[in-house]
Amino acid sequence: MTIFYHYTSAESLFGIGVHGLTVGDVPTDIRKGRGVVGVWLTTSEGSEGHGLGGRRDKRRYRLSVELPEDAANLHSWQAWSSRYATAETIETLHGVADGWPTWWIFLGVIKPNQIVGCYDTQDGKPVSDWQNIVTEESKSAVVPPWRREAWQKKMLKQVSKALQKHRAGA
Image (cartoon, rainbow, N blue to C red; front, side, top):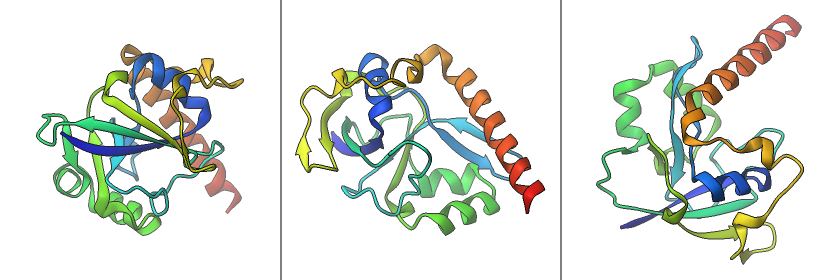
């Protein structure tokens, strides 16, 4: 078994505690807005260099995930992307985040019992009751495994709208 890390926000902890790590967008063609649903992991204990931006603080909590390194759904980003992502997509991601050599993706659901620890990066302490951290947005952020594809379609639509708005203002 190998330990991987997944960084997330307080708003996501409750849903992860209920269903596990169920979603994440893994781009395959950034120009066409295509990708697959997968969970991003890293071997890096630090959150820097992974492109973790957005309106939520996705660097706040570091989850430790225990997986067999030979799990069928586990892929190093470097090997997987060279087969399934466009060169432009790879270049774009590597251009905004230099931590890519440590990236892995899991193309499935990581169950709550595979999450063996949580660390608060803000106060530097382990969090034993992380599944019970609830915020105003927590309940709406829950994505059960059977809603993964719908989540991705909604997310890609939002990204497309944001890009159009950005291009119109540029």
